Length: 140
Image (tube, rainbow, N blue to C red):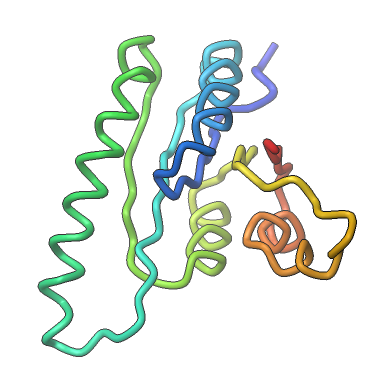
């Protein structure tokens, strides 16, 4: 029988709230012998030539952090890759999922504020959950 999930995407922003999403993704990947992609989108504001060096340094720093996070997956014998594209987070996450045959996205979210429900509609995790065709597991 084929595993339910073969490719798990974990978008991360390198904050402590990502720990739960990484832990759950690790468990699911181990159970399903799935490959894992850790993705951090470096959001761009301006791509003028003078800012490219800044983005290069930032991407390298993020890549180093993601490599450290990926070690747990590779130590368990799982295929893991690190991706650090430049762009807009929603577009890059949806595009990556579509072009890399991702069949599950595990990402952190925030608790919904029942007093301000409108703010919850504008979050990246909500937008990804609506825009991506594959299942999304949101960790609050």
